[in-house]
View 1 (cartoon, rainbow, N blue to C red):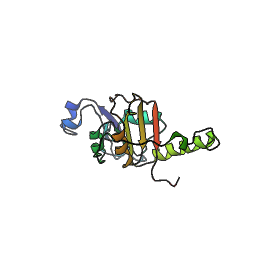
View 2 (tube, rainbow, N blue to C red; view 1 turned 60 degrees about the vertical axis):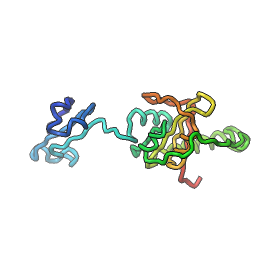
View 3 (tube, rainbow, N blue to C red; view 1 turned 120 degrees about the vertical axis):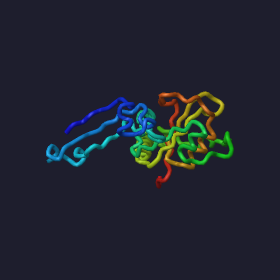
View 4 (spheres, one colour; view 1 turned 45 degrees about the vertical axis):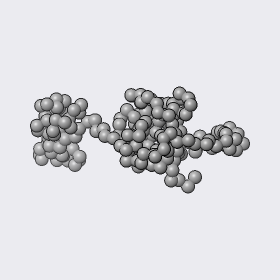
Length: 197
């Protein structure tokens, strides 16, 4: 079996793909012969097949996926959308909210149980937090609106699987400058939809 890695898009463009789709990619092409491939798995016997690396597209961005991994969520379905502006909602095929900014009356802090109290032990909080992250990792799509908490410069990221919640959160948050490469933010919210708990 012979494996070649071609980095020059101009040299291989006429053979493999149009030039426009090769910018910044490495093309891998493998050649094999029938007599040399006996006993090898089918995945290795491909003749003349190629793939492009990196295989990024909207919803599949390696640096953002690693950033989410640092936040404890690994997008296993390769569909995680970073949403910082209304155009990002359209790319993620979500509805753009009619009213921006969205005004919300927050719930009283007294109604929220705090970890380490009689209502919510640290062990229960940690268990539910980890289970939520695991279920988000298994979701078909992740939507991650980012912005500033209204009236502050405190950055927040909401990681959710809810296509209804993400546009509302983006409408609520104040727009913040998009940092590339992405990094973990001071506040991360995990919002899971579609579970019995």
